[in-house]
Image 1 (spheres, rainbow, N blue to C red):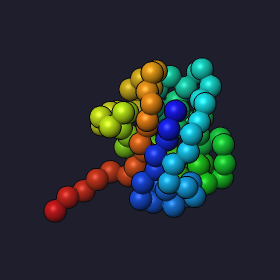
Image 2: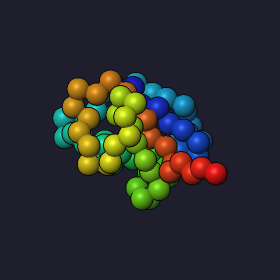
Image 3: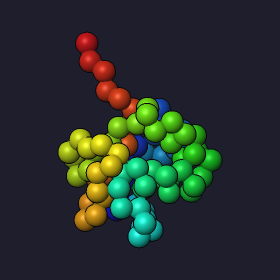
Image 4: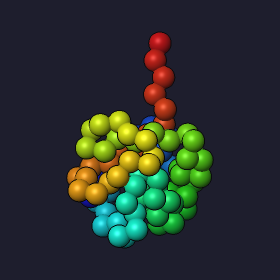
Length: 83
């Protein structure tokens, strides 16, 4: 599974993307984020406040309760604002 990071999430994690093999219990975006937070200090910092995160599964915006089963790509980013 390919994980993409954007904006300050990328800066905290220290990389723009990574390829992972998540554990079987990481079946939702939120569970995946919880697991990723255990993989490094940078991940833990980036994912400390889940209310500040948004996600897309295979390029479709989703909530943190969305399934990641069968997903090829997960993007994690801060809320987008416009103007």
